[in-house]
Length: 401
Image (cartoon, rainbow, N blue to C red; front, side, top):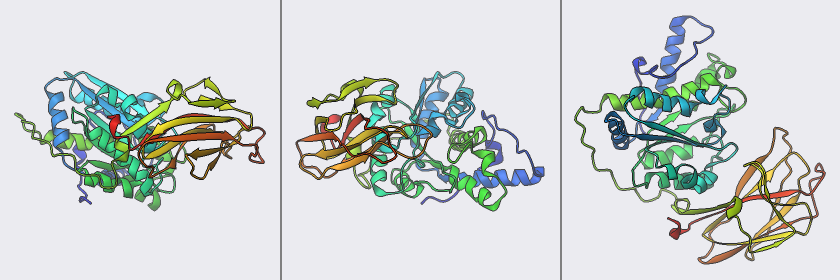
């Protein structure tokens, strides 16, 4: 892993409105700020892509800044959208390059990980042809190889774009100081990407008692305004460092070829079926529901109802809706493999969410049948059998690009 690099305090404030610490002597606060900033940088990575987009903005050309991730990226925890880290970073670009038109695209979706991110990237962000992308799935992804494979596919999709965008990785954390950084940073190192860590920067201070969790977080996982501002500062400090070293007469270097996958390129080649694109080949007892973006899909409350799709790919993923409510269980089956039972009821009461999970891996080439059957059994705490199929995805589809 790349070495840690201290960032000078002169780089800490440009374009970022940051609340003052409410307590403690000023010298102690300044020392803590320096420690935090120094720890925030995991790696500068290869800066050629950053140089290219910064030079483009400096010349007054338009720039598209994009962020993709979970609810933190969507802005959860911030008092308003303008104080979310993505908006603050976009604001830095606008302030640093007033002659350049800066478009900001927020592709954050709450309660989702990099598997769904890889499946929806081209629709939600890639279609806007981003020049600079921040990727944030360190909290929502589990710290395992399966999630790392979808994360790698997302990175490869972005890095393969014709406009050759610069990519930076952001590692957030939960209130146990946990995240998927170990796996994700290995991939960042493999692709030579700049990386910053909210966890590395702040968790030592929280553990030592020099900073309270509540000073930077709105709940168990979502940063408050101060936390979002920290993330933005970590990102813009890297941008400022590269910009400061950018020659006046910059000639863009040739970019290295995309290396071979570290784990797999399966999630580089994906197809997502969602909403009206989720068309079954057979339907007995299900109705297409088009409500909120969260609750759109095929719905049934009648046990024995079946729904069947046909797809091609090496990996099949499904997304169903989970809620503390009258939800039932369904059996998912790919071809003649053993069925997988999924419970749509879950205990927390904070609201519903769409759960995306891998249904089958290592499938042979060709078409595959995906069948879902609503079961008579249900969780004892549930008062009904409702089940909602939101999306179907496949990875390892070489012809999808």
